[in-house]
Image (cartoon, rainbow, N blue to C red; front, side, top):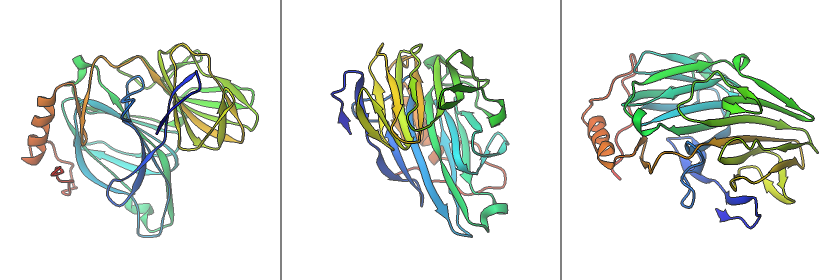
Length: 294
């Protein structure tokens, strides 16, 4: 985790490893010196991982408030279930957008039908801060297959617009504030000018090596760009990057475990509600992740 000297990059954020219950992720946001980029307040790289037959992902039911989760996979499959009754398998290129609002409970697991085989998983889990006037909105879940998302091409560059607006296109994923989120695949030697229409922007290197203003950056790094800077990403090898950001969030957000809110008191209430069993239940899944003691 370092501050950058490049005049178009404000921060170079290196990931920290976290265990989320038998599965290791690389956490990029939040970062001590940069809590958010646009509405993105949480950003985890999941995998790449391989599971032997009989193994898989088992993130037991757990609660959220005050945010929207965005799940996007490069490889593998995850089954989402929630207390609203939705069951939806997500595959590479699809988008699962879950709005927690006043409260939702969900699980993320490997389907029993594929658990007996060798499986893989690689993707990004990000959280979007809801505007203050929507923090207590009704929860909801929305699935968008890959084929419904805009594809954008430049010389040596192929992009999928996950959410928001960029490069003259708009994703069908309904967002809650101005933002953009792109999956970008670059051939060796290709260049891409980062869209300038959003105030806060970042580049996350998924795979390969890139350069910005002559400075080389490796997979796993998030590069937070300076406002109004003209930035070009050059692919030093075949590379995959995520471009993300948007308008700044409307005030400070507090994060504790899976809860996000502009009010510390609201988080304390959510903690008590989970501990006392006042959130909803997922039909057919009686397991749950206990409230952390710390």
